[in-house]
Length: 504
Image (cartoon, rainbow, N blue to C red; front, side):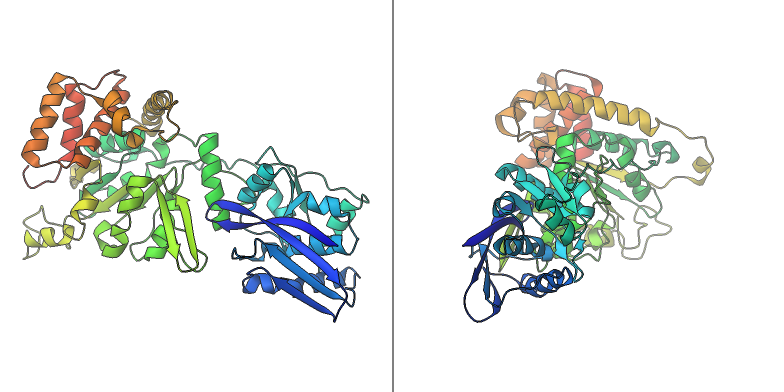
């Protein structure tokens, strides 16, 4: 007689169901584990045996075989401990077999029988809901998994509690969702003196999720501006919060089961490896671009990143997803992020100041910015120069709108876009628009059409650049509350597109 329990194997953010089969048969005493387990899964037999021994449950002098089906799917991680123990308890008739079969479980066992929290409770709960089973997990993982309201989540502190629950001695109360993490107090845009054009670019980028490149001398305020971007972004929608939290769950970034409505803001150092940025490693873990899904990826000192790392951004920027391909895994992660890059104009940073520039100016500037390839630069919707602020301006009172006022305009523009793309599930913001939809929503008036055609011919805009100008113009029109894209909107979008080009 074979007893069964169920768990999941993770492939990116997708949790694939795995059937844990346990058979106790006559023969020489043995405890074997089959079904392509990795080292952590293979060691589960020792943890399970010792945990049961701590509960005064002795294994019979028979042959115990655990099969993880489908057998051709690699199984990784310590979360297989609990489902293996559950199937074994059912095979030994300590708990009812039908109860074990109606459960999807994950959790790591300590040698004393206590359950240790594991990664991926939220995706596992989604899989349990699709399979129509309840989810059994460690108590510390319960609040995270309970955010999936369509599944019953049982969080147990130890294996003894699991036995008492299934035998009816002491049922465990279902877990409640964790607290929504309160957003931290943001930094205000009014703290930035001057730089009104850069602030405007930041507002446009936030409204339409457009990629932004800022170039300026050291200390001009590029990082300061980027740090205030989270303060003008609207909170995550429930759908976005669930998507983002599933990725963060796999990365172990959810604190005490709480889900945050604040958009991610990731700022990797320029020494980060390719695997750290796009994802990879032994288990094909999510990288910074996926951790920034529905949020911001800020890359300071952009040209200092290795050329190979920068080039890997090209495909994810276009598709909104990344395929991490390794010899033993092909994993897909979503990565719809807003890329904000900051760079000095040259190695010394003082290209625009003849008194402070190095002896190689202006060649040093061409060499330095030349580290960014043309195809990658073509993917930035907005480019803005951030000039140094005069000392006398630093003593002036704060100017410009506060972050709260800018955030209100951004939120209004995003609400317009949400209504616009309600019938297009693969599009959420203007940055996603393409094909016939882009032509319908961003077709400019006659003057605007003449302007963009003249600019495209004179400056040699690529087809990608042409469409990106239209998307930005549509966002500017949304910020202005205009139903149509007009000449001033196109003109402003063009001015940001051509900033820093040699022809200007």
